[in-house]
Amino acid sequence: YRCRSRFTLNLSKMPGFFFSNNMTELNGKEDCKLAEGRIYKKKQKPFGADLKNYLKCMVPHIESGIKTSNSRNVRLSAEEVIQWSQSLEKLLASQSGQGVFREFLKSEFSEENIEFWLACEDYKKTKSDHLHGKAERIYEEFVQSDAVKQINIDYQMREATAKRAQHPTHTSFDEAQKTVYILMERDSYPRFLKSKAYLNLLNQLQTNTSKLSV
Image 1 (cartoon, rainbow, N blue to C red):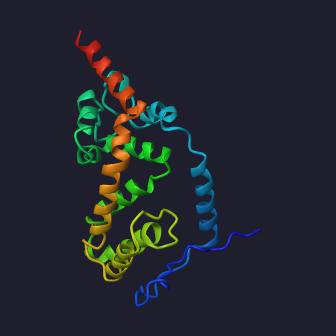
Image 2: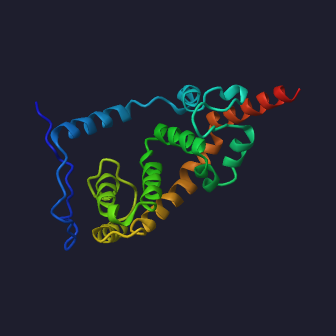
């Protein structure tokens, strides 16, 4: 049995919206990988069960507060984790916070929200001559009606975003990004702050800080 490519840019449901002819179909191998990704997504383990291992990989020596081995010398402290609870903006401003929140969203099968938000942040930093290619990829992956990681926006916004992406500027995805941000802020973010995994992480770091100060 051979997987067939299905994930092509399809704007037939949006009359008048066309991208340039250089858009190509995903090949069969990529489609197989996407299908496998869907199966894997359904088998995600609970967030709390994976958090400790995730953090050990992302921030080595977290329990003792030692700096990580990477060039940015990331340090996860109780103070930083407390700041995550002040606003979603502060959570997403932290590289570690992005990673932990992303794992939480995976447990709720909604990681496409933060992935889209991060893709938009990267897109806004893109050089003008590379905007078209990135706009196509973001549209195909997150916005179009049959996107594998389709974000939750209404038809009118999906149509407007398609039109903006046709002639991309650095603000082409701003409205959709804002909508997804508000969705996370009102829905997933409050649940994240109440989750046992977040509270246990904070308690562990506060305990370790107390021990180190003795």
